[in-house]
Length: 112
Length: 114
Image 1: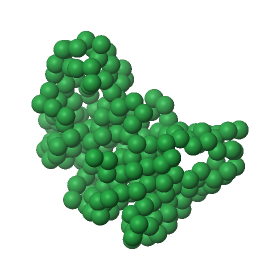
Image 2 (image 1 turned 90 degrees about the horizontal axis):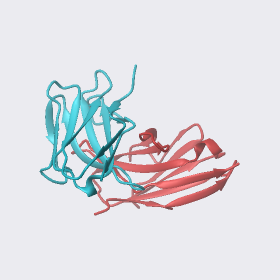
Image 3 (image 1 turned 90 degrees about the vertical axis):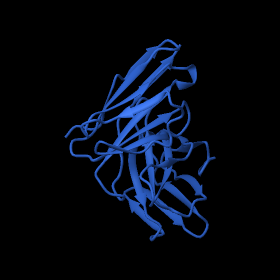
């Protein structure tokens, strides 16, 4: 059972453009939502995270938008760069547990 | 300090063999997690330790999978009688104690079962 859905599966963006990745969840017990970036042959690296008591969090070029009523959250990458080309995973964790549930990933390619 | 270290980076085994994968967490990190990542998929939770106690092993796919962390630091994931479907990248992550702490991942062990 896929508890976190993620779209699109792949994304191609021109350099300088905005990359947008969307995630949706069903379990209302989830209360922590990180985004991870993974390069080939490397482990996932934490990019940015949000709790549901805020609707938006921005760190540099990366912004998370969170819609608690719709149970949806998204990652926006502003001024996308070729170095941003990687696979991005959204995740969720419930307050009752410690492990993350990951989405299936979005493969981002930023063209120079 | 150093990040999460996993060894070996690559492991090839024949079907039916036993394998052991090692994880060295970040020093001082109380929590340790194992995940399995199939090709082109997101990581899937296997098991979780807080210090030496295994608090959650609900993600282990079968009784052929066993994990331990006897001294609350280094952890070993063991897979007995390996099957081809065990082929995946096995990721280890660690974090400080507490629900709000981020998980830091190692680069994983790529396991290939022939």
